[in-house]
Each structure stands twice: as C-alpha cells, then as structure tokens.
Image (cartoon, rainbow, N blue to C red; front, top):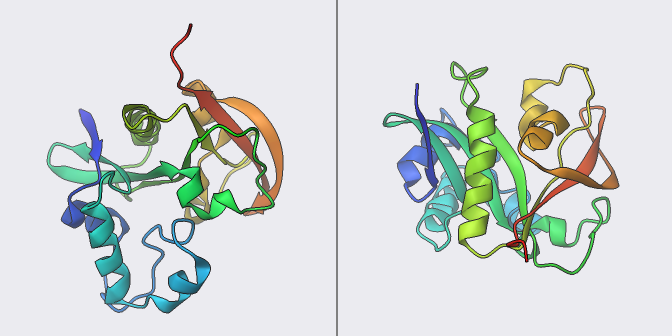
Length: 193
C-alpha cells in the first residue's frame, strides 16, 4: 500500500470521505470549525455539500486527502487559524501572534484504519501548510494517554500521533472532547537561521 496525500481540490473525492450516504442527512462535512456557527446551522442537506464543493475550487482548497491508488481513504482539514472558529475560541489559547495554520480534523474511512493513514495525513497537512507559507501549524488533539477514544470523537487526533510528527506541547486548553482534555500542539515551519 502506498498512500499519496494531495490537496483536496476534487469534490467527488472529498464527498467519498466526508459526505453522507443520504444527500439529505445533516453531517458535519468538516464545516463546524471552518464557518460561522450561524451559517453552519443554516446549511442543510445538499447545501452543505454544495458549500464544500465551492471550497474545493478555492485556492487553497480546504485540506488534504489521502489516496490509496485512486481511492480516497482519508481527510485532514487544514487552514489558516484566522479563517476558522479557533481564531475566536476562548478555550483554545493563542500562543503568540504568528499567523499559524490549524489542523483540526483527521478522518480515515472505515476499512482503512490501522494502516498509518492518519500519520500520512498529518505529514501531508504539514507539507500543505508549509507550501502555502505557514510559519507554524497547530493541532488541538486529545491528551488521552493510554485510554481508548471513541472513533467518532477521535477526529481531533491524539497527542502521540502529533508527537511522532514532531509537534510539541505548546499550551494547555480548557477544551474537553469525549471526556479527554485537549492540548495545543505546534510545529514550527520556519527555516532555521
């Protein structure tokens, strides 16, 4: 298996990973931290997918996708923090004034888990942010230790996977997800002087 991580610019591939089985279902589509809550609540059914299709046409697209051959098998949401709800989130602090990027959602399709895809997605998101000039990238994973995490709520990622990718603990947060505290982890992307 060779996993290739690419920008999420093909809507059909994004839909394969994030979209609902029923077009009228209200699924996240990874919009809840990307758009204002009022708009997030107004978008229903197919309108959510249509909104994401527009994001896929934007530059930069809304994240990265992992592919196993031609099959999309995973997703990571990554964007400038200033363009997300994390810009105003009081539970997740700002470490400094750098125009950091946020990596806040990692999803691997059922049937493809436990194959290292989340690691490839983190590396791909880091490369994507670096290519778009990010001086640093942040994530807000669960600090779960050895405790099991409900897969539905594991979208934020887990601390050890980000540590393996070189991220370091930058701050504690007051955010809790699925009973686990979240921490702010950061990877500096600036060239060494």
